[in-house]
Length: 308
Ligand code: PZK
View 1 (cartoon, helix red, strand yellow):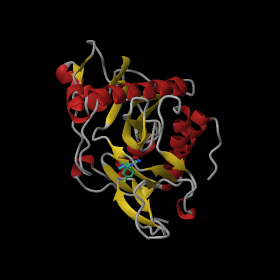
View 2 (view 1 turned 180 degrees about the vertical axis):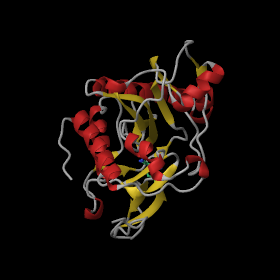
View 3 (view 1 turned 90 degrees about the vertical axis):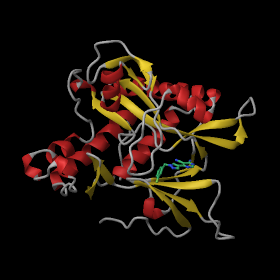
View 4 (view 1 turned 180 degrees about the horizontal axis):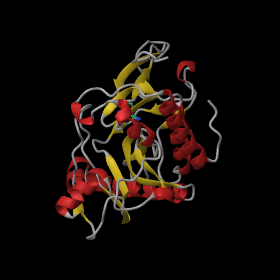
């Protein structure tokens, strides 16, 4: 069954919808007013492909990604504090929601790249650099970079595309100290992630992380603490590649979405990617195979069994 969006969650008010997730604010039971310091981050089972949110859902996707994110927050806790307060959430969203600290979000999408592909590859082919970061000659689609790089973008409103930023532009937005801090954290998170994931057969080509400031807990120098927010190192925020199929010089298969992409672009779907039309619903077997890939990634990375 497809739940209504936003959900009717007694004790919460809907504040924002992303493509596949929603934010709610808890209501103070005494006053009925929305909390100023907490949010409920809810992941749905929706999936996007080729810039469309599909009408078919992937059962348990929201829970798998929430549990994976929670596990990564723990793996990264010595590098950076995170926004998680509790995984005790209403039964209607059990397993797929987190109660988080409400932060002052930085107006930058922090992207780290360990391998070259997508928009980064286009920038490199035009300029020999990505977001102003110079790279050696001769790199191709899927090449491993000499080291992880920080390639930030603007946060465009929903439906618009984010635009590349130079590091100097990030400095102008948030100041030199915070810019250096989020750059170094972004590349450290991706390096730690790849150190763990490579041993489990998964490459993390790139990732998007978001940081916020917690003014309530200043750091040693009296500055607001930088806190890792949103989701982290999930297949929705990162490109996951199967390590055993990595072959620079071509488009890499996606760990999680390859069955969806292959079916949508096959004659069987009857869909024309360039038509602007909504993609058709997925066959049950494509849904099942895709669900299995999300569960497989979760289990390979965490060593835990996914229990729905
Ligand atoms: C926040 N988003 C993106 C995520 C959506 C939208 N801890 C926080 N404090 C304040 N704001 C945010 C967060 C977080 N995380 C995150 N926008 C604001 C987003 C999920 C669903 F609809």
